[in-house]
Structure formats: C-alpha cells, structure tokens
Image (cartoon, rainbow, N blue to C red; front, side):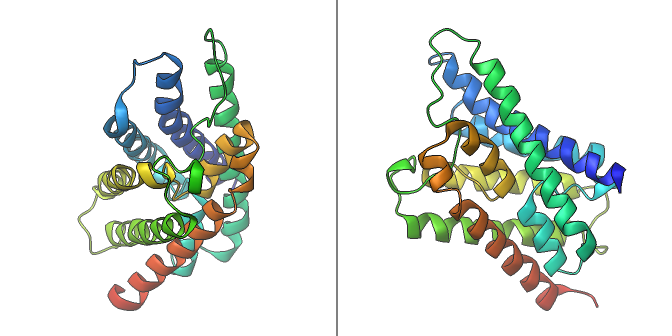
Length: 228
C-alpha cells in the first residue's frame, strides 16, 4: 500500500505542479505565456507522463473523482478509496505550496486567483454557478468513460495513458473559460488554499460536481459496456 500511496502522491503533485504551474508561472512573467491551448496540453502531458511512469504501481488515478468513480465502476477496492483521496489531496496542496515559493520569487508577484477554480464573477468567462456545475459533472463523467474504456481489457494494450491524457487536454480546451477546469477535487484544493477567500468559499462545487460526474460516468460504462 505504501508504494501505491507514494505513487498517487507523486502523480498528483506532478499534475498540479505541471498543469497549474504552466498557467501560474507564465502569468508571473507578464505576457510571456502559452495561452489556453498551452495550459490544456500541459495538463494532458502531466497525466500521460505519470500514467506511464507510475500507473502500473497504483493505477494512476491522481484525482479523487477518478478514484471514487473507479470504485463505483467496480475497478477500485473500497479500502483504497479513502487513503488514495487523502494522499492525492496532500500531493496537490504540496505542489501548490512549491509553486507559491517559486512564483513569489518574481518581482511584483501577486497571489491573485493562483489558478483556482470558480463560478459567477470568479469564472473566467463569468459563467453562472449552474452552468459551472453542469460543465464539471458532464466533463468528469466523460473523463471517467474514457478512463474505463481505455483501461478495459478489450482495449488496445499500452495506449490508455495517451487516451486519458488527450481526454484531459480536450476537457481543458472546453472548460478553462467556464470554471478554469477542475474535474479533479485535489487539483482545485491546492490552489484554493493559496488563493484563500472566494476560492475556498467556492471549493465545495469542485468537490461535489467532479465526484458526481465520476460516479455517473463510471457507473454508466459499467452498466452499458462491461464485459461481465
């Protein structure tokens, strides 16, 4: 279990450090940024790289919504759920802390939103709470469908990390303007703790919606497409 939990901590740390870091550190250096497409690709690459590196150790969840969704889909033992969720969240918080140390070393640094997720006036595009809730549920459900299908024993072997990483890239391309993209409660928690204020007040949505979406997506795949 220690190896599994270590893998989940490192993988989630890498996801937040690489994905959120691509936005936070670019923003620090004035206009030297990679844009929406670049940040989307960065998040996808974090999953691809760590899924290949550590997926064989822990399953490569790196996301509480994925862990809970896979449990609902019959792919994760109930006893692994709570420990995985705890270490994923701690890994995300640790990554946000390291990003803060790096980013705050630049002249004129301000915390700002620190890549946190939000709705209403804190949505990048000003989207309502309902719109953000629906987006996070639907996109996380789709993400779990991809994960369940790509890791199905009937799927082509060796390509699951690519499919999952590309799915996360697509999700970010769709929803950065809506919620700044969560689909991952741990990813939302780390930056929210640094940003504080509104980010912590709105964090509930980015736990509830991804978990609900994950359960729906994995449950639907299990019911419709399982070979058993």
